[in-house]
Length: 258
Image 1 (cartoon, rainbow, N blue to C red):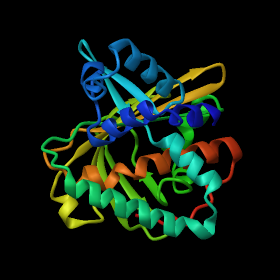
Image 2 (cartoon, rainbow, N blue to C red):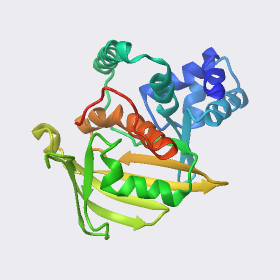
Image 3 (cartoon, one colour):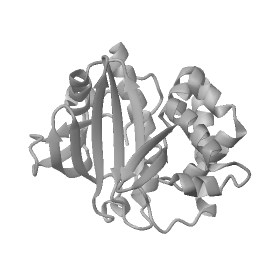
């Protein structure tokens, strides 16, 4: 985790993360505009450090290279060093801060949410943990997928032990063990259900026995409430996935199912 602490130690890199927090999916030019005293090359160097620490992920859309805030490493630090007796208070303060900042922000369109995590395991093992119910309920808010995983088939996420409906969707793409795409319709809140489907993509890349998992949640409508609802969830989910695959045990946390 040393690269994360090193990356966060610089005030300009923290400013870049703040700008991505305010509006995700920005180009180098847009980010450089927020640091007028620094050259474009200097901003590039800082972004490279943030990418190496996995605090920033990038996606290409045509000729544009877009940068996204990746909160997973920060979540891993939180899970490691914040004691259980302090988690509830820290979580409450963090949520209060986010609520206040969100009220101050006016967002007309919702970009993608992009998160990634590196897992010390073969891609096939990680894929299995992401698609089989006996694994997912141990880190994905106690939910289990019910589907054949064939493109066009229904995907129904239910709560382990109760069968309560959590999320509905449809399998859009299934390329084992490389890429999985499905739609996402929230069922646990009528207001969120009425918003209709968004889209989730899993991408898995393996190098020397280490698998990089990238999760992209996009296709949100303008002013989406689902965007805000799921924003804090993916870092928690990916942290739990990493812990389960690498140790065989679920993440120890007070978090409950959705």
